[in-house]
Image (cartoon, rainbow, N blue to C red; front, top):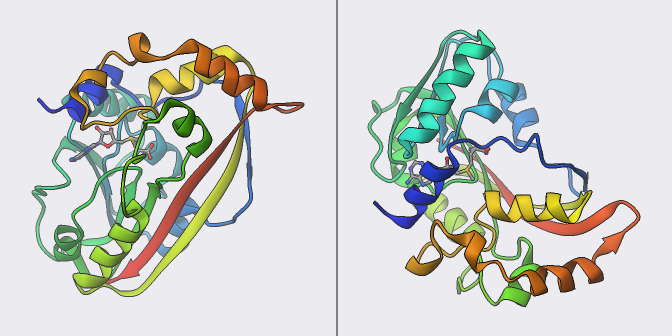
Length: 252
Ligand SMILES: C[S@@+](CC[C@H](N)C(=O)[O-])C[C@H]1O[C@@H](n2cnc3c(N)ncnc32)[C@H](O)[C@@H]1O
């Protein structure tokens, strides 16, 4: 089992409701606003790397069919429980690897990939002609000051930012009208515990290529660095963390 799969299998859900924070967006690109604008009641939508289906169940519109997939069987188990609780219809969750997709060609109107890895060619194949890809990713500069203090973290050592790699790959496989948009968000964590809870729950300080950090981040968190970071990022609104994402819209 690879380190990333181990990490997500242990986490089992993508529910942040217990962590207290507020956010201010400096940009207005919103993947769910776009999804709701572009979907019709007849749409077939695929959500790649759906986690526990939390975002899908809350933000996706009512359409003909939604398929949510994830590599982690534990995430899909959670997604199925969340689906039952939600009472929503026309939704199916199943295990699938984004890098070895097992879906019919030309079968989806919209593919959503939010904070997960993709294979542009396989997404292109499964979209109908005129179909849309909506992607939001975590960029190298996300939480960069914190990652710099640790000297490691998600995409910290990437030579080329993942936004550029995705953008080029999406163009290369034949997508049209490809737009790459930077997303810039300020998050404010209410307490130190909320801030630590975020770091334990997400791969911000993880580098999945380093075997030693997978699954035991708690032991690896250097709390003196966290204290330094918090001391220099305290504001009236909470502990500031600057998030850098990117959005991509593309048409087949
Ligand atoms: C950061 S979570 C994002 C969850 C959800 N899309 C969201 O936006 O809240 C990333 C998810 O991608 C899944 N994932 C990672 N690598 C994958 C792969 N190769 N194929 C499918 N899912 C993958 C993880 O198991 C995890 O559930």
